[in-house]
Image (cartoon, rainbow, N blue to C red; front, side, top):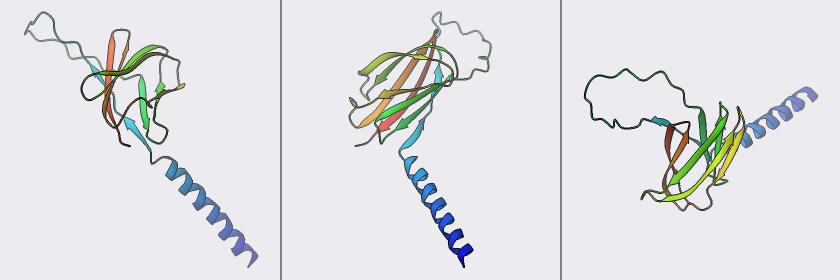
Length: 135
């Protein structure tokens, strides 16, 4: 009987922990970034080489509960970011200094409800993504 009570207590504790962890992740969603290529300036219609296989050095998650973006980088460097509202107005901008596998938080308290675009630039490369804030 004692073993059954002990087993039920352990299972209950595990269920409570997993429910707590699951509820903490409901407000977090990934912001998908894609690389934005510069337009051709010469207007030349001749064939070009396919772009190299390129990985995006940033991973961005929207934490709706804490009103912030969580940015993780797999490379070192300074990234300039711009957050635009749905009308194309810059809401905020800054430079973040990333080092490999560190987490940087960008506060979104200035942003009202709506759809926003985030643009990162680094070494002539541009990465862009969209996220939505609902209050």
